[in-house]
Length: 83
Image (cartoon, rainbow, N blue to C red; front, top):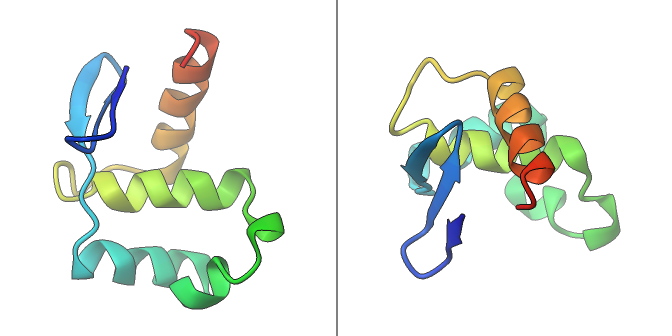
């Protein structure tokens, strides 16, 4: 379940709030090895890893120990459930 107005998504059996503050964007750039500008310069370059990193960086404010692998599993379940 996704609520775009509130930046909320249900993942891993829990309603989670996605937030992109300064730290989230810095974490995204560090993990991706590229600036956000470079990451999104060409929409054809956005793949599964970039999507997973985006979700991961937006959720870290709620759970600092969250891993990209765990986010990948949650996204897989989300898709399997019709999300």
